[in-house]
Image (cartoon, rainbow, N blue to C red):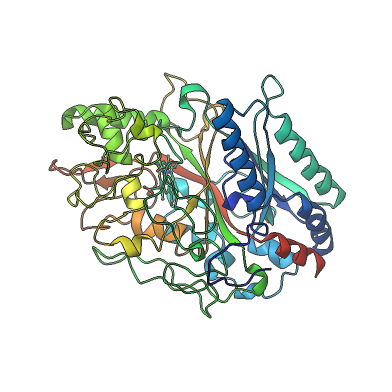
Length: 506
Ligand code: HEM
């Protein structure tokens, strides 16, 4: 196992593959419960050689890109199927993992125990979550197996995904492991490809990680690997491994997002090259969102598309509303989608992310409470670039559920399976308190962040109903009901490949 590397060269052969980004159309998540430590170890020992590394994934992605560049397309001749695994605190304990007590409080408690803190209340409360997350848990979730594969043309579309699922099922049966639930996600079809269910292009802005991922789609700088991986220097040059738990996220005083983050706590040595994984099943009420945008926009003197873009911070095409650095004579992106006249804005990775709110302090173009501005305030001050870059997350989500059918009504108390759609949100970070929880609570749920009275994140804030949103230039604050409901989730740890072997052996 590698130790903290001052030169930040990463052990990509040891880090699990989804840290580099599977980027597959089809994904499946299997939630497992072990019966006892010995059979759990035997299961992990047999599955370990199947686990994709970041190096595997990066090599495949590079080959795919090279072939596509030469031939124009590669999907017909090049396919891959990847398997990764992560564990809950209970799962690590059952495996007899050494020094588990040193893991931080957030991870040990789990997502449902942190519900109050992150704002999962009333219809987002754990009591209403769907299986296997329903609280109190019928059976403990010990592990999450992540499967991802390319589709195959024709009726056998999921044949590769089914193949790797079959392998996990076989091993589970052999070792008395229960598969509690299977959740499937996939990219949306046709023109909706790459867009989440409200219609907005997703998966655009990701932090580049020094030594691991390219930062082409990122703002100019890459982020230190210690923000995402255990055992590496973080943005402050600290290496994960300090003695204490990081502070719980606090709503800060107006204008400042709370206490400065502490380094990841003194984790066991085997945790090096690992990462914490947050999984969240988020149901999206597409009819209610569309109805709100349609009903409110007229009175505000906006089109529905404009208001929707103000809530998210980008146009449905993914084009920024902010002025894009490096594109001369662009149309006013705060009024119309600039990619209609300049398609390269969404096609060229140098442009789609080239903005930083620096010349939009009052939020006239992108309101300060818009989803992407709350979730990553970039150069906005407060909190300022340096603080914003201490709370980055690596998003790996995928939509789930059927396509919205025109004429569907907003959700009622009971949501039929045929209309249950949303996002299987996943993100990796070196500290859950400093990553997901901080973004969710201290930024998204806090109406006074970044400035007093800005309002709540219209897409993901959870803790209040109705929620306020300040649209600069309009006197009254918008009152929004919740369109995204938490219906399950958990906190997991993704060990390195050598650590998996170590857990199986000891
Ligand atoms: C159903 C739920 C969600 C929807 C529909 C949604 C939608 C989107 C969209 C359309 C974007 C812009 C595309 C991009 O930059 O990749 C985005 C960006 C982002 N979202 Fe979400 N999101 C959801 C949940 C979350 C959650 C739970 C978090 C974290 C707590 C989050 C954090 C972020 C971040 C950090 C960005 C990138 C901001 C930037 O770098 O500019 N999102 N989301």
